Image 1 (spheres, helix red, strand yellow):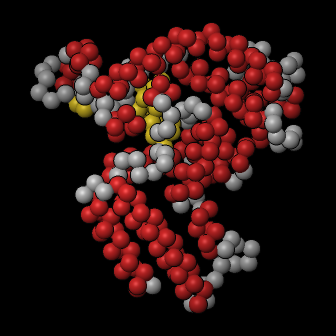
Image 2 (image 1 turned 30 degrees about the vertical axis):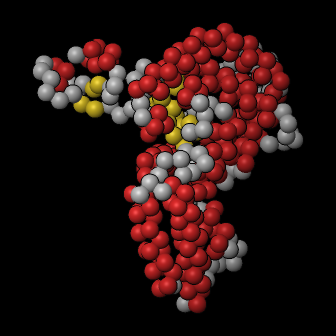
Image 3 (image 1 turned 180 degrees about the vertical axis):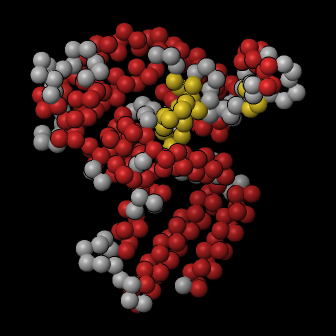
Length: 297
C-alpha cells in the first residue's frame, strides 16, 4: 500500500512536469500508468478491508468490477454518455441521454447518468482538455449557441463532431429532435421486440411528430418505420435553413475562438467600466465578437 501511494504521488508529479513541458505523448503514457496504479490501490484497499473482516456481503459485485461500474466512477459514465450521444448523433439533454442509454444499453444506467453528474462531468472534461489538449480520444463538450457561441444550456455533445453539428441555431432544436427520432427508430427497428422501455422512448418521439402515430397511439402499437418517414418528411422542410445558419456560426467560431472555447463555449464576461444601465445590469460581451459588443454598448 505504501509503495503504491508513493508511486501514485511520483506519477502525479511527473504528469505535472510533462504537462508544463508540453510533452503530450509522455503525459498520455504517464496518465495511463497512474490509472493502473490507482486501480491497484483500490484492489489493495479492498483486500485490506476483507482482511479486517469488512468483506462485501453475498451477492455484491466483486471489488474490481464494482469499482468500474459504480455511478461515482468517471470513466464508465463517460463511456455511457458517449454511447448514447453516438447513437443520437446530435447534442442532447442529460435526461434524454440517460433514457436512450437505459433503453438500449440497460436500465441500470439511468441513475448513473443523472443531470447533475453530467454537469460535473463536462466541467471535468474542460479541465482535462485545458491541461492536456487532445490527450483523450474524445471529450464530452458543450453545444454552442449560434448567436453568442456560448455553451448551450443543458446540451451535451462530443468533441469529435464537426462544429456545424455542435452549433445550435434557431431551428436546430427541432431539426435535432427529428434527427434523434430517426436514429432511435432506426435502431429500434433492428432489435427484438418486447422492450417496454424502448417502445415508450420511440412513442415519446412519435407523439411529437405529426403523422408518426397510428389511431390507437399506444407505445406498443408504434411502428418505427412510420416514425422514420414522418420525421424525415418534416426534417427536410427545415434542413437547408438550419444548415446555413449552423455553417455561418461555425465559420465565425473558427475565426474567433481558441481550441478550448470551440469545444466548451465562449465565456460571457461582465462589462467593466461601462456607465449607465448596462453595467448595473451586468451586461455581457463576447470575447472577439464586435457585433455583440456594439449591440451591448
